[in-house]
Amino acid sequence: MTIKKTLTASVAALSLVSLSACVTDPNTGKQTWSRTAAGGVLGGTLGYLLGDLIGGSTAARIIGAGIGGTAGAVVGKQFDDQIKELDEIAQGTGVDVEELGDQEAILVRLPDGVTFATGSASISPTFRATLDDVADVLVRYPNSLIDVYGFTDTTGSTSLNQNLSVQRAEAVASYLAARGVARNRMATAGYGEQYDYLRVKTADNVSEPLNRRVEIKIVPISQDDVAAARSQ
Image 1 (cartoon, rainbow, N blue to C red):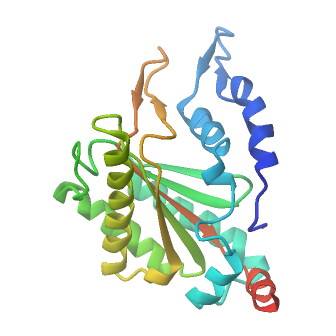
Image 2: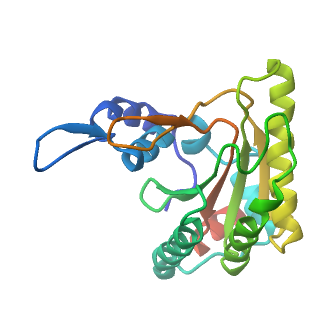
């Protein structure tokens, strides 16, 4: 597992979007847009996902968080276990859970319109139980760094939306911290109206925007990563 990704990878991923986000019906031969494929590929083209973690120096964040790391042979199993548990939590909630790269990171996308109301950074009371479950998983798998990204729709001014996106990311990070997730594992950033995300709901290519959202990127840290960070 490589902590530092290059934006070259995002360019390569972008060239594959038109092919990889389509699936072929084996009975009709017709290609349709796949929500799962599109989510993975479109997510992979964005610099904030494939680029470095928030805060510049990943090594400094590893040291600052006091992470011990996971033994190399165990990283893959823990990754699989964690994403399975998050998938189970997400069932019926509107939350999307995706693997980024080859076990590079887990992306948890909190749903538009459910986590926040328009113009608000207050987490909906009806969504808190789901976040409680997410926090529980993060506590039980402590050897990871967590980036929390906030986004808005285009309602209101660009500057207002930028501030609102930061507030939404901070609200989720603070909520997770209050449920026991170490705050020094988390960093936050707001992207305002940038990075539209469309989730395809049906085979008829009907889609829904998920712009008023928060995304949580979970990056597993191995003992090798910790050793490398300490050597810098």
